[in-house]
Image (cartoon, one colour):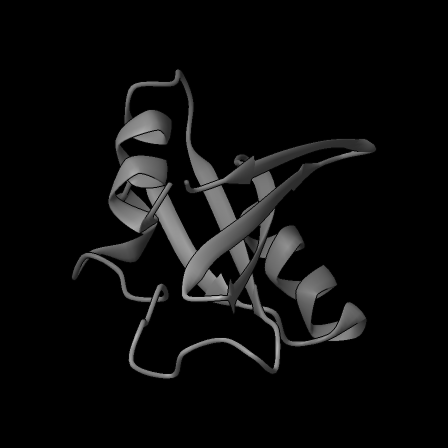
Length: 96
């Protein structure tokens, strides 16, 4: 699953979404996930880099009306692996 697939899924899910992207050290730097539409506040999906607990809390307060997701992005053996976390539930998605 890549960024486009995640975006497509969330755009077809009711409500607004905030996605906090955490890149692992082995992530391919040429594969950027964090970019947004020009009018961020009106976008159904907003992407942000993981900035640490304190700054993430500020982000969550600002976008309090959105479902918050964290996506951990890494590259392993040239196969992207993404872990999507929502609240206390964890779903692992691996591209084959």
